Amino acid sequence: MTDALLTFTEAGIYCPRGDFYIDPWRPVDRALITHGHSDHARPGHRRYLATHAALPVMRHRLGAITAEGIAYDAPLDINGVTVSFHPAGHIPGSAQIRVAHKGEVWVVSGDYKTTPDSLCEPFEPVRCQHFITECTFGLPVFKWAAQDSVAQEINQWWAAQAQAGGYALLGAYSLGKAQRLLRMVDPQIGPILTHGAVEATNAVLRAQGYALPDTRQVTPDMDVKALAGALVLAPPAALGSAWAKRFKGASTGFASGWMRLRGVRRRRGMDRGFVVSDHADWDGLLWAIRQTGAENIYPTHGYTDIFARHLGSLGYQARVVPTEFGGEDGAADPEAA
Image (tube, rainbow, N blue to C red; front, side):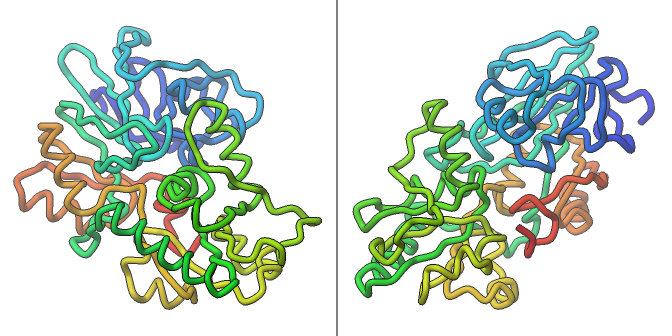
């Protein structure tokens, strides 16, 4: 693997010939970033390269960084290596990164999902010989229902709380998942209130032109009793906090792919669990791999060993690659915020 176009080092995925890293987890000189979640876009690098659509939220989260934007599908030469960014369908601005040199082609998928969500740029398969894939949900039990069907479940739950004069308190990751949910819910049911972390991200994405329904940030002086019937959207860490306790008697829900597992739903202690994920399900992972045409597959975070064995049974050369990337909700631990 030492002569390969990409190698796996203690700092992250490295291209020796181009002298750059992809989503490195330790500070490096030049970092190509797939998307703005904190386990992929980390602070401390000297230079960043990401899609134009990903940069605003990266700057919001990382502060003043030296960064260059790139359009989707636009080739860029870095020390004789050609790189290009292609939609990953994960969150707004997310990308797979294609790396090519003298006929050798690798694709680093970052996180991805294969079904459109009406918010972010839809996933585009990229042909390659080597495909580095996440497999957060690399078990056959993980199969997602159609988004319209889940939206109907959420709206019915919210409408029932509104009719009873209560609140529907819904937990979701503040970048990507929360905005996708905003596109799924029916704002005619009632007001939509947000935690500050969600609202700050909303503002960044609205400024980029992503259409979201009207929301109101919950503030200390807000009279929430006058807003009974509201949907309240918050990051998972806020659900059990003093912030959430002001919504007395609220029905609590959580939106995540992990809600597919009964044990996780029970441990979360929520009234409702909605299976909504920004990652590919089992069928989506296998479909994406087939579309690449790659023979060499490198599963990273998730159910890597099981998924690699299954790929081997299908005739692929599959090798598990440890990384420090997390899974859904920004951490390998499904219970984490």
